[in-house]
Every structure is written in structure tokens, then in C-alpha cells.
Image (tube, rainbow, N blue to C red; front, top):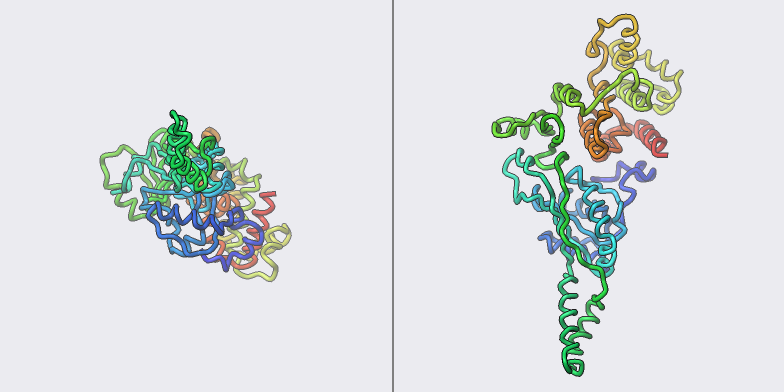
Length: 417
């Protein structure tokens, strides 16, 4: 993505602020990993990487944000530094990519530190699917086998060193000058590997409920009442619903029925009487108000944060637009005197959708995924959009006027501190 329009975000440390700089010998090791994965090496003398080894500069060079993938069914990663532990993943292919990397470092932190002293590690995330043939192939996801490929194959070299030493210890081999030379040559080239902790056996990560960018984006919601698939792309959705073999519910992300189904399955909830008193409600209300406000003589940030100014400008809107902004409060006010009013009569649908959150009964492990789904359905809460849908946030940010950018940065920064 061109960063020329993101300078304010960069200055506020809200745009890819935790990338790791790569230069010198590390560039050579990174290129060796790319070659091992069948990817052309970069010509860049320096670049930066995230927690899984993805580089925005190389993605721009190759004109492919998913350059580490060998097709949609075969993602990869690169470990070149122990500093990658705990770092964000800025272009995840799956919603569970960060959890996989946490598993990798929890199990192998010592080995990764040891190996990356003079080598690098290619990661192969294998879900047992060589290639996708249709969108419902994502239902085959059950687990991901994480395999490790050291570019120097130090494990093999250590085995060879140990064999040479075993040979040295036999009989009078300690006087064999040729054997001495082989041992010294290996030690000079690779170091003494006898005591180094470099063993990396494959790991298995269980994945049942997740989001994948395959087929232009699919949410796979299992572990609940009935499996639900949510498609971001309409053409993919139309192709998927022709399938009659799988007992799953399928929705396009823009279908109004989706939110109702998610509520019925206790995946999301919205208590208007509670949420109207929250910061979430205020953010959504101000964002929708800002979208509707076309003419002003004051800075947007001042209008949104000063109650008297907000009231003044609210009254410059048409009646219909005022109802869009104040619909929730109008509905709750009328509800106190009569129950004849329906939400849809007074509350803007997009506003209502933006006030939802993961159901209180949802397990913590699924909360982030449900938030990711919610911000794709409605992008009106800029803080949640930034937290759970950064790529969408950056795209929207580029289209905003300067004072809207300023308000969003101040809102997010205040929430982070």
C-alpha cells in the first residue's frame, strides 16, 4: 500500500509501528528462504518484516501482498530473528496466524534464538490441502501442521559432526590426520554444533473456527449450534450455495438475515439500554454524524468533542439525517411510554449493527474472530475497525478529509493510552 497518504498515522505510531529492520547478512538469509520456497529473491538492500516474516517493502516490490503463499492453500513464513517473538502480523492470511506464531515461540523460543544466530528458518503451514478446487474446501481445515526448514540444515550437519567424533573415538583414529581435517573443516564452517539446541519437530495447531482470505474471504464458524459460512465475495457465495453435500448455513456478509442468525446462535448481542452509555456508542454516533455533516465552519474534531457545537451542527441536518444520528436515543425514549415501536422504525440499520459485540457467553478464544466479523459487517466504529480490521481501516482512512483523519487518530490514541 502506498504510504504517502498515511503520514499522520505513521507519525502517531499507528501504522505498522513494530516492524523489524532487516539489512546486511540477514537479507542474504531471507533470500535463501525465499529461494527454498520457490520464490524469487528480493533485490532490496534492506527492508522490514513482521512476526511471521512478511515484508511490506517486498510485497510492494513483487506487487503481491501474499507473496509468501504458494497458492491460497499453501501459506509460508520466515523466521530470521528472535525479535519476531510477539510482534504483530500485519498481513495475516488466517485469523489464527498470530496464535500459530505464539505456539511456535512458546515451544521453540530457545531453538529459534540458537538457529537464527547464523541461519534462518522457513515455516510451512500445511493443512493437508494441496490446492483449493471450490470454496467449501475450507471445511477441510481441521488442523495445521507447522514444519520447520533450517536453510543450513544444521540438524543434519550436527549429525554428521557427531558421526565424525564417534569415528574419532574408535581405536587409534585419534591420530588420523585426514579425520582431524574433516572435523576442523566442519567446525570452522558451521561451528561446534554438539551442544546447540537446534531440534525443531513439527507442531500441530487445531483450527475449527476461523477466517481465511482464501476465495476472497470466508468466515468458518463451527463449534456452535450449526456451522455457518460467511462469504465476503458475492460470486463466491453464489458458487458455494450450489453445493448440496454439506449441512452448513451460508450467508453473504451483506445479507440482513446474517445478523439475526448470529444473534439467534448467541454469537453476538446488543443491549441498547446498556450500550447507549458506552464509549462505543459515542464513537459510532459521532462517526455517522461526521459522515452526514457536509458544511461546517469549525474543525470537525472541535464539533465532535464540544457538546454545544455538536448540538448546533446537529440542527443543521435534515430531519431524516437527525433521526439517523439520534435514532437509538429516540427509540429508547419512546420505549419508556409504549412498546409499540420497533427498532427498525427508528434506528438506522448500519448504526444498530455497529453497536453489537461478541455474546457474553462466547469463549475468549473466539472473541477476536467475532469482532473481526462485526467490523466487516459495519465499519462505523473506528476504534474497533483499527483493532480488528486494520487493512479496512487504512483503506478508509486514505479517503477521509484531513480533519476526519485527525479525529480518528486522536480517538484511537486516547483509547490506547
